[in-house]
Length: 474
Image 1: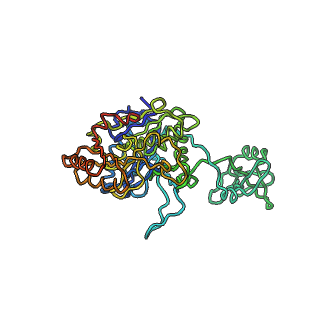
Image 2: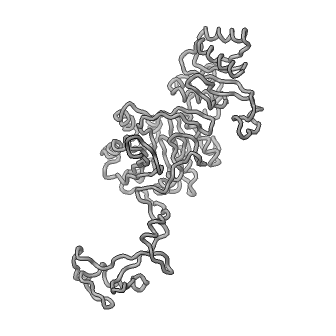
Image 3: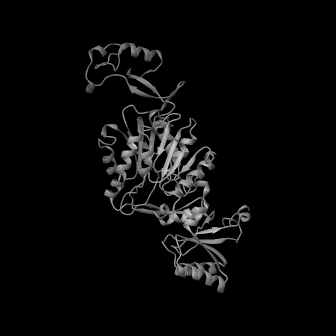
């Protein structure tokens, strides 16, 4: 099975090509059915419309059920599964995962609560600051090797108040209480002290503790056992020590639901081993894949996302952050190649594809559909240094505006509107991309060139795919 690969497409289709019992760890962060729409900038250049919306919860569950069945099929018997969601549909997802034909109630391991932010103002309700991560395994023989984390300082200062040459410690009871009842074999005298209800251990274990210097006798003559603070603790199911990706953080890409690398590090380290295969079937901006690649003991990985834009961003991250080379260290497969496939794309996804295919820069200014979608700069200008406080390519004003329209046919009103934009921005050349152009549109282009000196190049989607202008990721 090929690994270190990003598949572009619906995971329901792509998962069918993976063998049964082939994946060691699955993490997914699918759409939450939270009725939100996002418009995000990635690396301040690429704009993408991100839809996180289903008609209703039933539609969301119906969407997820067949995909979860495929994910369960490909998971190894020793594998683990993590489902990241928020409260909008988490209780429905839990009921779905508990079904006997999926993971089943007996294979539920944890409901992890991640405190993703410290404060959030919500109208007429308590601020929502947590996400839920459901942790399931396929069997009881799943991989489990969690890494310890540092103790909370408030906890240690409150409970581990004593110190000696061996470190910090707390005192624990070592005698039985009335509620525990008497045990005849545990009622014995030790160093002049005989508890009414007995000790909590047999004499030989008590003597061993005393020999290690782990018994403390109070002024009243009552004994206690020293319990030393360990170097670290195994995380509980409440994760408050991992902060979300901040607006100014180095990790931040602008992807609206980007998760921090530390979150995936914890999951990967706890539920996989060296050379294991990690799968993220909704990989988004690729945090799971980056985390798997950056482990000291490398893991293999597979990512799937329906968005070509997301797949491009992940590929770029793997190159920039991990030093990998596309085509040598990893591959991107099944990017759209046909006009028919591109017709199915949402408008913003289609726009991103076209701008990337032309080798242009995405426009940061957009008011609905009345702005410039992209700018094509001469190659000699692209190589120039960007200056602080200036536009993407410094003070350069030498660019060709690009308009993209995902309609069956671009008409003359569309061309006339583009002409207005060109004149507003003092451009004499422009590019218009569409599936096809009407005769009136072609006639208007000829008129504008003849009478106003505006040169507009009409490029069809079919021409772009035939020229293979996007060879690098196609």
